[in-house]
Length: 304
Image (cartoon, rainbow, N blue to C red; front, side):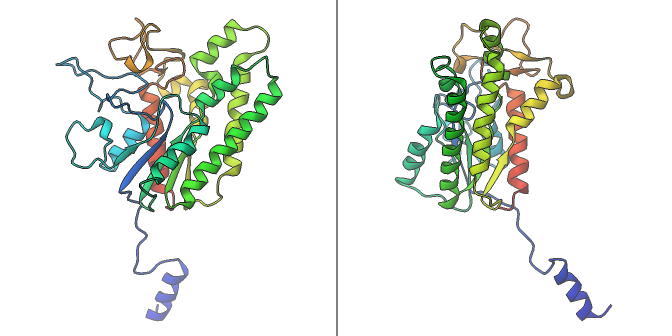
């Protein structure tokens, strides 16, 4: 083969002397609700691990998904900076109780003294509190109207994610897990006899997720989707395939505040690693780890 022909072949295959560099973020910025938050105390909404020697909180253990994502890029959040990193490159805007309507305010707060850069990895996971707020309006509000409102909120979430992307950030947005499959949803199914409440909660969730996905910018260079809903559906349907022994109950005791749950305050028969749910709507550490792995794969494979 002549040198000219070889060069033509390389060019035709998209080759050349330059190699596409993998995305290497310099900051991670987390927006969301209890599934993402690390409190100033270092506590998380899950199962907090205690140091075996001191019995004090060790916030580096049982990390949530954004913590795992940050750690894989050598970053930490200020809220869990136990090794004293001089300038933690993780910024935490996630907050307990946050809804879609609060997300714009959090983005405004960031933009009031900062901006988004193309090396910022921005994570967004929100919607749980929206679905619960809508659910509590039933039956005063009819099922159809509430499902329509869930769609509206999903669209509003997409608009905020698009706003971050258009402002320069590279976004990972997670779909919401089915709220009817949570211990809360399963308990509502048992307590209420008018309709199947777990199905209703899942219908609200599906409307929210569908509207969000339909309204995201159709540009894979800017936004990566983390399919938490599909992952959790598989875990709930086939728990043993994922090494879970319980996917319907909360591992944490009900007399303990969800942010105060630790490896020492579990139900007597609960497993820290093999029960999917920490609280009635909060993810257990093994699920958080799986979501973190999904997010990392998306961040590495997305053409940011």
